[in-house]
Length: 212
Image: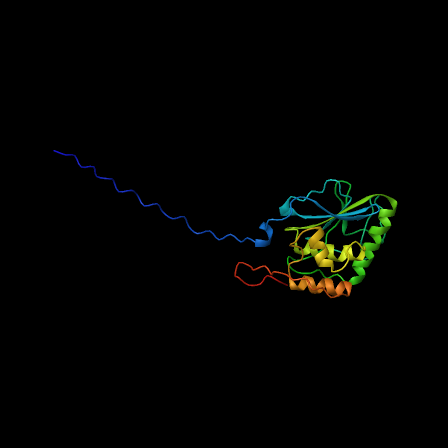
């Protein structure tokens, strides 16, 4: 008499509950990592990066987080000896012997800063670099939109860039720099130029263009 093997019915595995995680595609693009050297002239050097791309403050003298919540033109800067160049110090702090200035800047958007701010800021960088070697770091979260916009403006005013400022930054820093239409328009407004650089707008979790 033959024995017949009967397979035991397997318990049906329960499907895990769906989890919705908000992720911004621009953060995970395969491009730069760490702190990237962008350009230098004399004793002034510009670096950039993103917090999610392992940017490091090591070796930096001036740190400009583009994710802060305060700025003031008349309290624009403090040099490394702690001297205040514009009166009372309010929006600056020393972090590990670094001069730090946070700028209120929404992701994918632009700051409420006029041309005079950037011209004054660049003038101070030039003045400080005459005294000593200065390493300046710009960074945001992904290291693309806000950082790329700031670099386009600052490097053009410093006369580092030639031709289209956005294309120059994309060539010398990251091909993904400057992400939104509003950022392109802001660069054009501040510098008084026309750029033909294109952007690939990021979509939010609802599939809508993420642009301010």
